[in-house]
Image 1 (tube, rainbow, N blue to C red):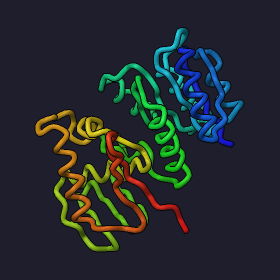
Image 2 (cartoon, rainbow, N blue to C red):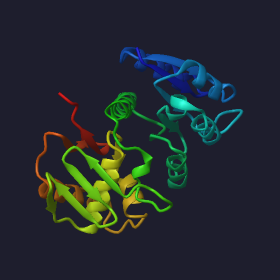
Image 3 (cartoon, rainbow, N blue to C red):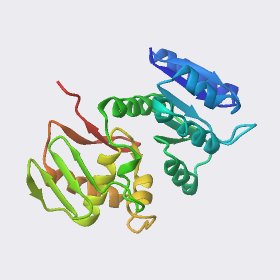
Length: 241
């Protein structure tokens, strides 16, 4: 049974999360303050940490930094921020620190469980993490997932060794989604990360680009760009047979 550590100081929210985690077959570990969280992660070795940002004695950002500074696998534990702070600047800071997903309160408990499973699945499949974000500073610029090859320096995409003609923005969107395989992003998130907060055209811009990607890339048994209705999009890698 996978251990999920929950760090939140709101009793009602913690109780709802506990019930849904147990129903989904997870073992919840509940902490209500930031003090001792980093040591608890090292000691308990949870499969994933659900972390609030605004805690009575510390900041979730500081705790995230402390966890990522741990040696070995403990420092790589998946972290999902579950917080009332929904500003884009907070999301950007979180992902820069190495958070795996970001959920804003109020939230749908069923969506929470789905996103926990998506993050765990990505980790199990060995999907790309934050190093695939299209940022400067030594970030990874190439990515291969099964028969898909993406080169962000040359703006080139190949499927089964065949070059696929895509626009630069389509390539950037594909690189971002594939580099964060298994993670669900809202349309607004994708506008922020891939379009750099240029909201001209609105969320329909994202839908149009995803539609074009699917058409140009064609079907694949190894991976797919999934639509999560009412939520957004995720790049999913098929499990090995």
